[in-house]
Image 1 (cartoon, helix red, strand yellow):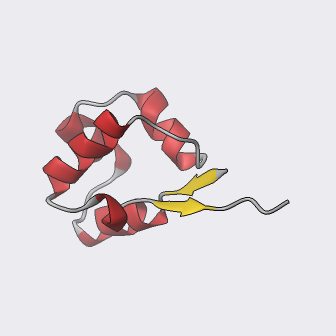
Image 2 (cartoon, one colour; image 1 turned 120 degrees about the horizontal axis):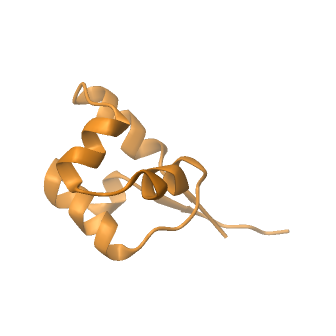
Length: 69
């Protein structure tokens, strides 16, 4: 099981933001952003903070990638 946050990274680019801006805006730590960069799961609380801060839905920032191996 894997998570893909490419939509989030694209949204940040569209909003002229970087990962540090996201951390400050959402009050999340660098370890959390690192997990997302690696496609690892983060808590729903974190995803909620991001959605509220960016004015979007969860489907706008993350996709579940099924592992069929």
